Amino acid sequence: MSLTIRALRRLLGGRLRLGAMPPLSGEMLMTSGLAFDPVRVEPGEVYIDADLSSPADLRAAAAYSRGAAGVVTGRFSGEPWAGRFAIDVDDIAAALIRLIDRWPRPAPTPWMLITGSHGKSTLAGMLDRVLWPSLHARCDPEEPATLAGALAKWFCPAATCGDLVVVKAAPQPIEEAVWRRLMAGCIGRLDLGVLDRAPGDARPAPPFTLPCRAWLLSVNGRNVTFCLPRRIGGSDACPETRRPIREVRKDGRELSWRLGDRRLVLDDAPPHCIPAASLAVAAAVRLGVATEMAAQRLTGFQGVPHRFERIAIDGVTVFDDTSRVDETTLTAALTGLTQEPVAGRKTVVVAASADRFTEEAQRRSGQRAAHHGVDAVVACGQGLAPLVDAAREHGHPRTAAKLFETSVEVVAELFETIQPEDAVIVCGQPEHGAREIVEALKEKFATEPREAKHAA
Image 1 (tube, rainbow, N blue to C red):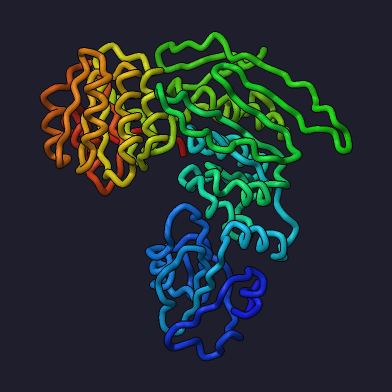
Image 2 (cartoon, rainbow, N blue to C red):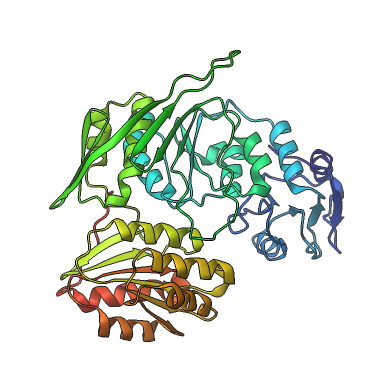
């Protein structure tokens, strides 16, 4: 749908600012659509900034540079570029809700929501394998769990694929009202829960109680809870059914467990995938896929690339967790490492910049690393001293914590300390050398280079 600048301003409210050289058509300029990712804006589209937690100056500049006709933000202090416009709104969340309510859409595709502090990408990858053959539901594990990603699917249905839309969500408290309105019509929600917090961590939990008249599948430890929606017009919820996951065992390359009275088997699946696999199978069954068929489709699933990806090379196990890093992803990585059977030492490498962690978050992460029984913590990057200091203060006596400035120094340290049967997890950002560290370890410990396997 296309709107004039004037109509869009009336729809959103706010103040219109035209560039020093205004558009030739002025307020009657026709826009060609909406975009919510500043690096995916097409020429003529309007970029709407859905990041409610930080100033929009850099994102607005990126959108303008890609040809955006204008930007809609709540925190943009710059000037519109020549021939462009900006709409400043006092409350961007309220503006987004008005847009959701008033924007005409074709018949909506059913939505399913994935929530939780960890494992969302793994679950999305599993759902892609389980649901696509039957429901043509495409789930992209690399898609960020952001409000912007969900809004793009809402307003641009042509960009989605299949008969069911699956959205990962990691809502912040400031975004909750928008998520509530956006997800009011979803058919089901899969909740992976919240990881245990470090001792003394008093931060409020993220809002995962998004309301929807839908069934809910949640996992807590080794229990999967099925909760059906309330009856229309009634006050009582349908009874919950708990199906414990039991008899989890690792035998060579086979991981098997029981979900209720069903025995499920995955080949070479890491133990941390069990909650996600159980939810994937349970969701598939709820949507009409046979249990045995869902489990069969998961056979061979070994995780999402660069998301706790296991690489076994000559007795040393390397976990590649280099998609991105922050406190939440590092906590999930540490929890996954704890669940892995490792005969030798466990080393955690963090390659990131300090802007990914506040000082408090670094200290919590260092304390958490020690709490999980990590033998060594190696940090790479400027400003990560609080993480290393906390690991030293709270660590097990055997824990060694070191800080380096470059990935080359980290690689040299690992080459000196890693022994057969050890496990190393590399958490970090590609731009800070995290993947170079992984490649160096693969080249060092593999007799001949080989790529880690992934499911198609």
